[in-house]
Amino acid sequence: MPALKVRPTMNGKRLDNSECESMRELAVFSKSGLLRDQASIAKLNNYFKKLVANSDQIESLIANIVDSPELQKCIDVAKQIAQLSSILLDQMADYVERQKGETQRIKHEIEKVDVILKQKNVNIRTLEGHEKLEKELKI
Image 1 (cartoon, rainbow, N blue to C red):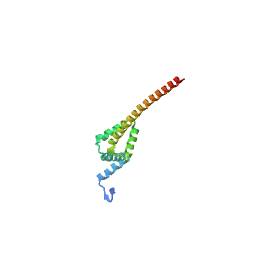
Image 2 (cartoon, helix red, strand yellow):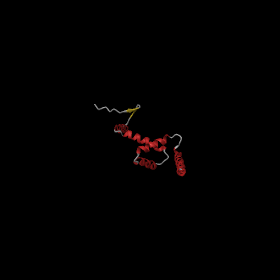
Image 3 (tube, rainbow, N blue to C red):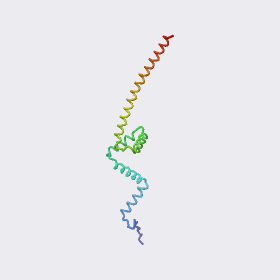
Image 4 (cartoon, helix red, strand yellow):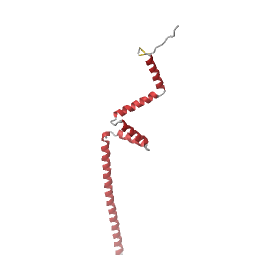
């Protein structure tokens, strides 16, 4: 009596030998964890497609972040930037420049106040010196 060959079916359709082989390869691929890795790669690829930057720019960004001595700080700053709902990413460069300008303005104001305070301190010392001399002369 000849051996019966059982042919697998999927959704009621019989699979041919090449489809069965593909299913076996997919099962082996899945068990090895490679399928999960491929899914992660596909997910990252979809994110990259949403970005305007080309793949060289993205690769350079990733390399710079990974090579950074403060990797966690880079990640935290990137998260903070992403969470700033009031600032759109395409406006970030202008925002940073405005903040730099504001910082410079404040530093300049501090320097001016520092000069005034130093002058007043000299004036106070001069007055104190004059008062001391007046007291000495009255004695």
